[in-house]
Image (tube, rainbow, N blue to C red; front, side, top):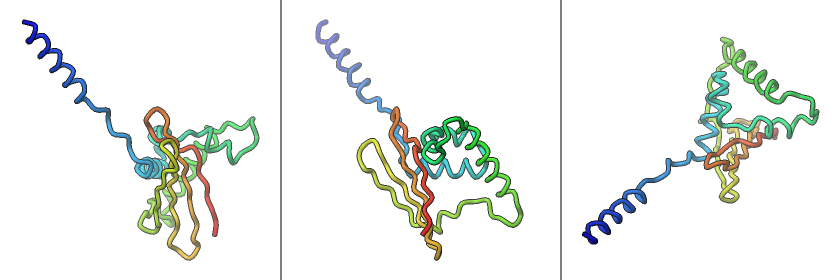
Length: 143
């Protein structure tokens, strides 16, 4: 009887230890999903990948600004520009050299460097928050 109990307990422990957490998406996957949602104007989808306050407070020093409103206006502008027949609305990832670097287990940098003669760069800094990568900074660098 005792051996049946021990065997059952070991089976339960083995089953519980085999359960694994869902895999955390890579920083690059998060940036790609964010850019795609942003271009399509999918505010709720894009919001899950960005800390709007962190990103916009770095560039806008006025504390009275509603960062959420600024971000929403930018999304709307990009969506409207993309609707134009003269401007392509998709992001051409193939025109960029893409690099992902993890500075430690909590911070990652994803860089998109244009292959065009302009050589512009977009740098996304992500932080691991609650087992999920979140964009906390976006820098647009001109050559």
